[in-house]
Length: 82
Image 1 (cartoon, rainbow, N blue to C red):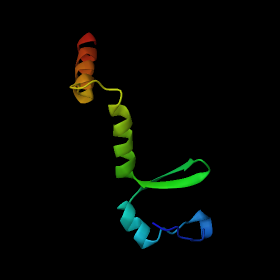
Image 2: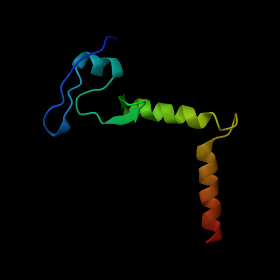
Image 3: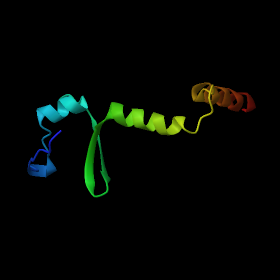
Image 4: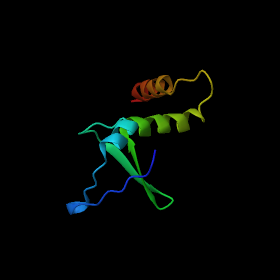
């Protein structure tokens, strides 16, 4: 996708053009995640940020292990100790 120029408005407001919102699957009213990376502003949908986080965590979880099941089991052990 080609670069698009836009201006920063009052109170730092930035308008994301419709074609870029469509490409990122961002709808009006959605919450987005902003981060600075290599001196650039990166904008992503919350859905994409969660997907990226899941991908990073998955690299450190052995095959066949459910983190949810591990967390539930840990909480149950803690309850029994109380």
